[in-house]
Image (cartoon, rainbow, N blue to C red; front, top):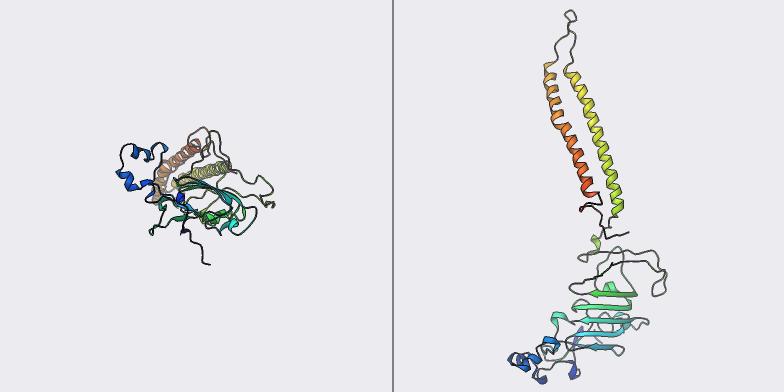
Amino acid sequence: MGEEKKYTPVKVKAEHVVKKDQDDLTVDALNNASGPAAAKFSGVGGNRFPGDAAPAYNQTPSEYVINNERNSWIVLGVDRQSTKTTGYGGKGHTQCAAIDIVAGRMASYAMSVDNNNEPVLSNVDFKVDAARVYISQKADIDDYLELSWSPMGKSKSTSAIAVKADDVRLVARNGIKLVTGTDTRNSLGLRQMGVKGIELNAGNRGYALQPLVKGNNLLEYLKGLQGQVEDLREIVYSFYKYQSIWNQALVSHTHLSPFFGIPGSPAFEIMGVGVQTLIKGCAQTELSVVSHQTNMAGLETNYLNPGIKTYINSGYNKTN
């Protein structure tokens, strides 16, 4: 017995597909219709629209299916990844109940009949189906969704809820909490070993994940680093002052001449360099130290102050 195809042309009941001649409600007929007939099947106001392709579903005996002609589905059954033989339900496991809510099977590939005018029977497709909320008592949900490896590891044989669509929005009028590790045992009765965290993974690149920074700890570190930088500035400034005293003494230094101990003149090459060094030290180094002190104070005011808009910590969002 060969592998079951993901989409299989089969003979199904007439009410499961839109036949080309069914009530003359084909796209061509609709385009040529006018007046009340066109309005009745235009889709406006929730009316029927026969041009909206909807495949049939490859239903198993244990599944209870609710659907409409616009390709909306609720399936109560067992865990299923694709065809009838997939998932824990397809393998004959117990305690693997599942609820599959789908809007738009096969999405842009949806068809009622294939090129041979045979009815199309669709299976579960986590990759292609337009929008899905999937609830399973036991599933390998990361594999179903083709999620990459990550430090958290893969979910295996555990209860799961998956939400997938082009765009997903979670909106709360109050707050949203993402919480892990609340129970000591999982739904299989197995003891939870340790706590798994929360991964924010853009692009399904688990290898690129890095730990989130804890804002308060970072703040303490930055304040400590700022203190160390300020201490270093004081050390450099003190050294500059001591060196200036030495430079002044060196510039004015003289030696006694052999002629009756008369003081000689300072060394001209040292005087030139010494005076130039004193001028640069005053004009550049000392001013740079003052400017550095001002800039450090500005950074603290702008980024380490809770009352400022650019404060590095979020006022709302937290992690541990």
